[in-house]
Length: 170
Image (tube, rainbow, N blue to C red; front, side, top):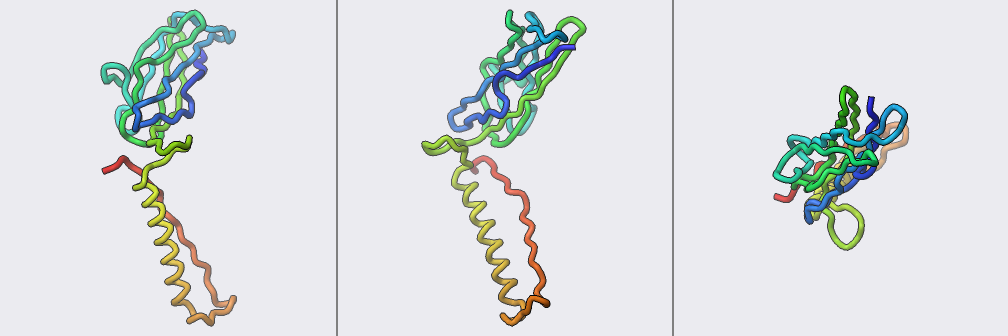
């Protein structure tokens, strides 16, 4: 059995706007935790949704490990879909195999700060959602007991927001 250790790329945030991404790098080790040279490593991007492509618009790339047991994907570019995704990595040498998953995120980075933003439309959706929740609370409070409700007759108000979804600009 082979052990695949992620060296670079785990948790990376790729910039859709500038088309820059953190290329995945893994190290393949044997059962004695020693680097394995010459192992075949396949990097596989998702077929749809957030992800990217390698050179030639390919969703997979196959490389061999070097003398230190390391393999690096090259020509990796994010696509224009924001969100989290996984890169599947499989290493093979003879009849031994190993695998790993590298989690990354595609996002629009904006402004001069290091934070990831989802653009004005995403912020707008959040503000509208918060404002709507406030309006509902105000309306419910105004119609309950005409302002004379006692603690014994007041029922708690529960608001359960739905998921916030941020997509690419339209």
